Length: 114
Length: 113
Image 1: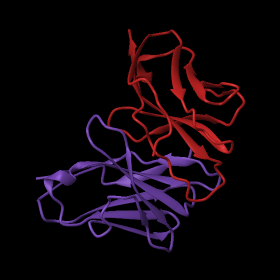
Image 2: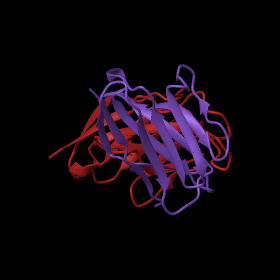
Image 3: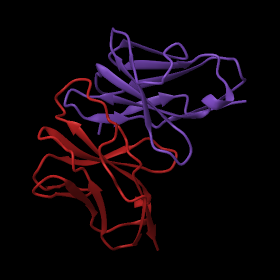
């Protein structure tokens, strides 16, 4: 199956700093990528839809200035958590939509904010 | 919003078939049923999807009722590595752009030795 890679797989940062997470589709082009957040023992929550070359569409309740999404190319989307706080600690997962319409998920990035 | 309901947890003996049910009573005519699973601390893995006919692949079988209001994912011979959270998702036809996947609470399957 298609491969979606996330980097870093885990990151620890101090409160107040910004953290960037990359999502790459390795063997296909993805015009649309999605970002999810998952807290322990909970399901995945869709944060935003990222479309190549345009602004991301955020789900209700997700702060667009807090979670900056950039989808500058057909194989790369980035999520930047700005001024991170301990409550932002979570498992962040991206997915990329192939031309067939199928979604392929990354391995996830675990963020811990001290 | 998720449009599916699943039991929160199930156990299955190793080597036996695991049958995971999903209710999607409000499914629309153009919505597919997708199944993904998530092993602890990993990204979701695609299993299978279908519209109205039963489907089978190397991983599992998907049985969809005639009225399409429910479905069952069948893992024919469960192994310990099948222990995971299984998500049933309904979604409009895959060719449409921008269709989001909304995850419900899923079923936590534990395969017991």
